[in-house]
Structures are given as structure tokens and as C-alpha cells.
Length: 356
Image (cartoon, rainbow, N blue to C red; front, side, top):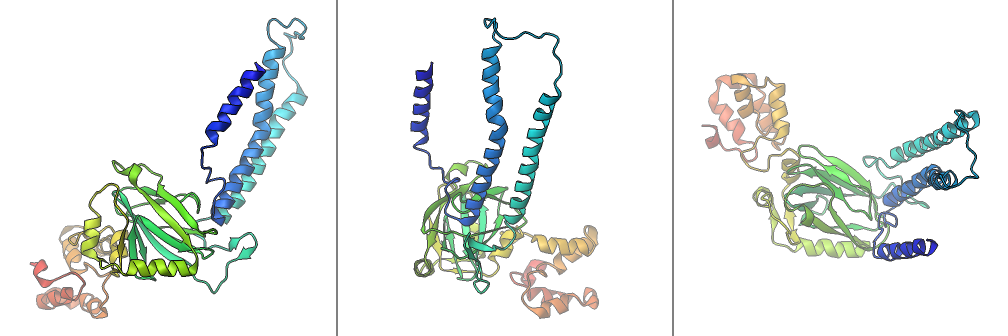
């Protein structure tokens, strides 16, 4: 029996030898703190689990039918000492787990800016986070670098020991953005922007993927995350910047078409309105953006009044020309159709012909 147990344990170790336990040995400080939390919580729970498992075997052997030496007490029904142990030990563990997870959960809030790069290195307040905008699409990942003016598909890079601020949304169904070596997964949801603050501490190439089923191409919805030194990151940005492709409204609409196993692609320039279109779910030119829709709702909603407001205030939340704001907000414009058309023609992507 003992030899069989040893053989099973040996084969188990052989199978586990092929596993990449990146969650327990990550390369980012946030993921490392999450790994520590998993280990601490597991150890605390094993304080109860291991004795229970051992006692289960002990009682099964000691009080088996064939053991005539075991005491037999059919009238026994209660023990205060046993009750104290049964209730106090799990209660103490639950209190410890609650305190541990409460503190760690607030410390690792993904929306909060980082306070440290590593256990012995605080964040330099003069170093701004690298902002990376992430959009999940069917079935690919789009990464936008607003500071660098570039974008990529299915490849992302960041500087080692520099805070990263991921701004995350979805152009389609709910998804989950996950780089195990960097930090925990964060959901990407259409019509809203989630956030994750993290840092990579070791150079290397790491796997990233979707951790939420999203349809036919889900299993190929993977990308590579590159941790680089500043010089290497600058070279990577320069390489992406040489691409002649521009991520504008037309290209965004093409990317929004479902596709599986897309290759890495680069965009050397981006339109300023791309991220707003993604967050407000108005990738198609004819779609009403959510922020404009909320403005319409605030001004009366449906009915004839709502139809008027929809057309009059389309694009007000994303207009770049202050003159359009003033023109559209003048009450007397309702009786002056020519000026209404003129005002709407000032808005990006709106022409007078579309109003008739």
C-alpha cells in the first residue's frame, strides 16, 4: 500500500513538472502580491483541511468494525471541549482570512495608482504612468498608445519598472483582459471604461489572452506582452511608427469586423476620436454615440422633441469647435433652419446633406 502511494506521488510530480506556474512566480509586483495572498490564504485554510483529512482516516481505521479494541460508547452525545475546538479554530481562521483579504483587496485595487514599483522601491512621483488603451474586439486585441500616437493589434509593450495605466473597454461582448505575469484579470465591457494599474519588473516576453469566453475565436484571442528597457521600448515605438497604416474611423470600422487568429499589425498614426468612438460604441459613422444619447435623454428623450434633440445635439459631447456649442445652444435657432444646418455642419463627421 505504501509503495503504491509513493508511485502515485512520483507520477504526479512528473505531470506537474511540465506546468508553467506563472501565477505563483510572476514578473510584476502586483501579480507577486496577489500570488502571496493566494499562498497565505491557502496555508491558513490548510490549518483546518489537513487535520480534518488526517482525522477522517484515523477514525475510519480506529473505529472500523473489525477493531474490537476500540472503545464503544453508544450513549455519548456531547463534549464541551470538542465543541470549543470545532468552533473556535475555524472562527479564528475566518477572522484572519477576512482581515488579510480586506487589507490586500484595498491595497491592490486596480483603479488606484501604484504606490510602489517593488517591495524596496517606491514610485517616483515625477514619473508619469505609461497609458495604454485596450479594446477587445471579435476576436483580437487593439492597443492604443495616445502619448506615442501609435496603435497595435495583438502585441503590446511597456517599460520595465515604469507604472502602466491600462484603460480597458470592449467593442463587442464582455471580455476579460489577462496577463498572468503582470497582474490579475480585468473585465472589458462595452460602453464603459475599466482600469488596471500595474508594473512589470523583469524584461521578457509574456503571454496575454482573453479569460472570458466570447465566441468562436475565443481560444485564438491571444497576444504577446513585451517588457523592455527604455531604449528597447523607444526602438519598438519607432518601429511601429514607421507603419504607413493609420488608425482612423474607417480603419477602426474594418478592424471591428469579426476575424480569427489575426496577425500582429502596426499603425503609425491614430485619430484623436478613435478611443471615444470605442468607449461610446459608435464605431460606425451612422451610430449615435452613447454620450450624445445621454445628452438627448437629458434634453427630453423620445417623441418628436427627442428626434429634434437627437439631430440638433448629435456630436455635442465630442465636438472640437466651441462655435458649434454656442450655435447649437441658442434657443432661437429652432425657428432659423439655415443656422441649424450651419451649426451642425461644424460638427466632426456631420454634413448638412445628412439632415434632409
